[in-house]
Every structure is written in structure tokens, then in C-alpha cells.
Image 1 (cartoon, rainbow, N blue to C red):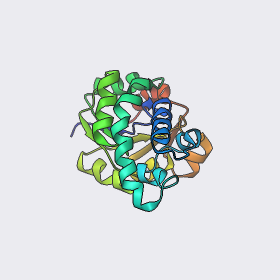
Image 2 (cartoon, rainbow, N blue to C red):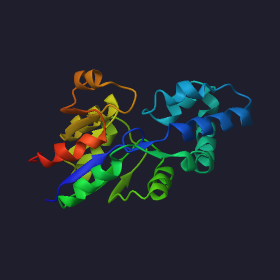
Image 3 (cartoon, one colour):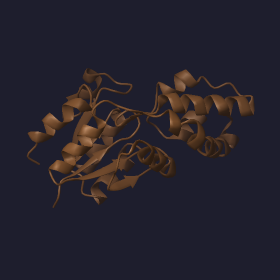
Length: 201
């Protein structure tokens, strides 16, 4: 079976914080509800509805999450930054004849806009997953490695029986990721091709 490597999206391949902050600011202005967008982007990873629930009453969470997703293409996608080493990491997988699976908590249509917008091609894209639920998608697509920036990504890799490669480009430092159970901790994706070169599977 061909090597399949899974990647998280936010703060693993892409720095989506500027656009997410902008989208929250627009949602705040539209609704007249205070949202601390700086705080929100400091804790990316869990499902959107968890963050929305910090600012809106429970009965409006689903409605506000839908509105956020609708605002996202115009306000978030154009502000996306590619993280150092992202293109090289994907290329390293392909040079080994491998497949790239992006497994993310982001709403899948918006995740697709991100990938298309920066020119990153994934063989598989699955959105709206978090922690253990990422494990099911990783198993389904035969991923033996999962790369992410969040302790929830480590949980997802563990749930799939995949090697958990953590990059310290998100909310957690290298020590925290190691303590969470990551098999490999890298400062960022620029270190990934060298690690993959030595990975025997």
C-alpha cells in the first residue's frame, strides 16, 4: 500500500489566523456582539461551534456558525499565509510515491478554498473533524502518519494507530506536544522532509 500522510490545516500547513480574526470582527460588527478575535485565534483547533458558544447564547450558536462560514470565503481565505515548509513537506510525501490527506476541523468547502487559493493539492480532503473523529478518517484513508499542531491532532493520530508528528507552530510548544504523547515533535514543517527521509513505515 502506498504511503499516506495526513496533515492538519490550520497552523500546520497554513496560518489562517489573520483571516479568522477578520471574519470574527465582521461577525461581531454585524451582530453587535463583542467577540475577542485575538483570543479566538489563539486557541484554534476545536470545532467552530465551541468558539461561537463563548460569545453567543446557545440558541443562536448554529445560526452564528453558519453566518461565520458564509463570511469566511471573502474575509478569511484571501488573508491566508502558507507556513514555512508546507510546500516542501507535501512534495516530500509525493517524492516517495505517497498520498497527501488533509484532515481538518474546518468546514470542508472553506478548507478546499484555502488549498486551491494557495496551490496546495491534496489527494484526500476531509473536514469538520476533531480529535478522535480525525482518527476514523485517517484509518479510512490508510494514513500511517498524521502531522498536526494541536494536542487534539495527537489524539487523532493515536486513535488511528498512526505516527503522531507534531509541529510547534500552533498554540502548543514542543514540550507540551511531547507530553501530550506525540511520537515526533518538530519546530515546524521545514524539518519534516528530513524526518520523512528516515521514516521506514
